[in-house]
Length: 451
Ligand code: PMP
Image (cartoon, rainbow, N blue to C red; front, side, top):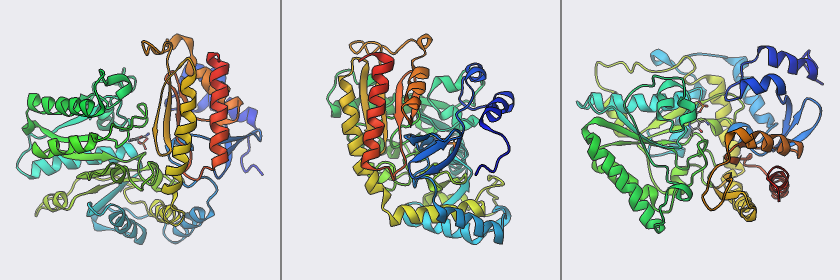
């Protein structure tokens, strides 16, 4: 039963007429219109015409527990019925936000305190502002610059956008806030000039140290990085990368912000990417998987040292959002984390992730697949015009658009662009669904780019 009044044709017409889509070619959308999705179960979603797809992108890397979880519906319903909203400004709190902060401390014990937001960009804005505030209250107000990396994605609000290292997101939205610096992405396929893996890591570490010394460590507040870069192109770092980066940051008193918006809550095969890669950040930002997208929520955790410093006498912490610690979102987060823990979904992410990568690597035989990479249940199939020179396809050829059309015809939804496929299914995906997904992508490649 469809509770909405419009049929598919009318929905498409009204979408084209009135809905401004994010990260969409608006010109093309006038002609193509939306794919309207109405229902989900496990790793599958159904469109308004009754067709089911494997959601190989888990919404937007976030529906970790899969669709149709009645426990999450019930958690939201009960909290909405009892107390729909109270803020967390001025020392106010509700039981769900307190319990969620305590739960997050259990999951990330190197962080003592947590503040919540409505998503990833707000979390990174919060992290960046806390880093600057920390240094200001430490008597070092000139420590303000933020080091990021090319191919990083930290969100599209102005500060998070400035930290994002993907030029397409910056174009024509300037001026961006100043004080953001960019290092190379730790992507061997494009950036390793032929060194061994330890040699490549040493090169990246040297680049960081050179940048710090050039800018002056007394001007740098923090380094922000995703344990595995995601939206900018899925970059699992080389072995030993974080072990090389972290001591340099410590040496020059630069805070480390781990952006776990995608990697958090099981996706890399452990609950957090920091566990997968064996390091601990001073500040962690998270979102997406904390509620599996059932309602919006994000947040940050901070170290006890930072908390001690910023809880100085006579200072109000003048930062926060109306929806910081929204009680309904926090109640859903608690129920969602309980599912992830009960079902140990990070284990399935590791096992199905290994299967996914093994199967995707078969595609490297294709004449236009330049590189396949991934960690846990996040992966990328990079297509190139020419494998020898690694030359990307010309945008005018519209390869991304074709990959999207054909893969959807074959019953799978993944993110497609001119770089290829990004894949990040729900952590509940089954062995058979992984096979179906990869088979559909293989057929799509053959159809769009020739066998
Ligand atoms: N950080 C990372 C690592 C992300 O992948 C994203 C979103 N894809 C964000 C931040 C921004 O999150 P949001 O879109 O919820 O603001």
